[in-house]
Length: 261
Image (tube, rainbow, N blue to C red; front, side, top):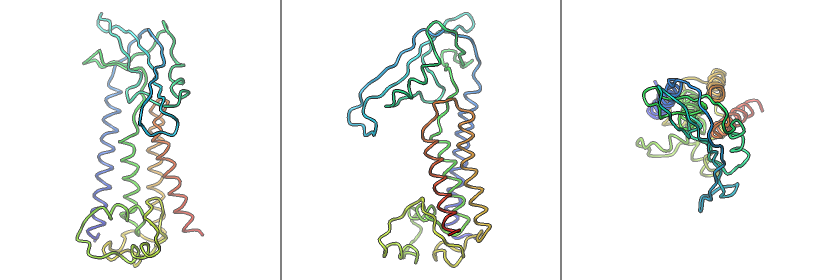
């Protein structure tokens, strides 16, 4: 039987997976429910503006591609300006915004996706948002692996935020405090046996080699979430998807290294 803390972590993981999957499916069904027609590009411009006080590594000058187009539905002419179904590109990298505009030219025909129930709602490309749906699913999978295997940093980080009558710290946390090492969610502890769990966490239901197998499956599934997003979404893709993939790979690499070395 799972301890209270592991049970809460497992429920949280399932909640993240359910919520993320629901949001992703809803977004995809909404986009694919649109009908298509042929429109004409009217203007192709690059808008820019300065964002004062916004912290950034690439400067405070932002660029946003702007394309207007007209199309006809049931004999009525509409004008649209939304390029993507998801959020449009708003970036301080001019090249990234320019790559969007290179596919359009004034007076050229273009395929327009419009809502049959509201023809004025239209877009040009199926570019989806990876956040928050994809992030919730990926993190839910990682937390699921932690909830079922000997305690790692991911679970410790989450459990530290859950007040469940915690009267004293576990030996592992006390050791970290004595060493002056802060919690790092991406660091996987090499704890293979149930005895190495904290007293409040209980023995892990999956341990030993099966824990490695479970973690591998969760990691591959999390990467599969990123791959699925890249497959159905038109570029330029959400940068958060690439960041998520990097975090998963680094975490899996550290997990493997600590068990092989």
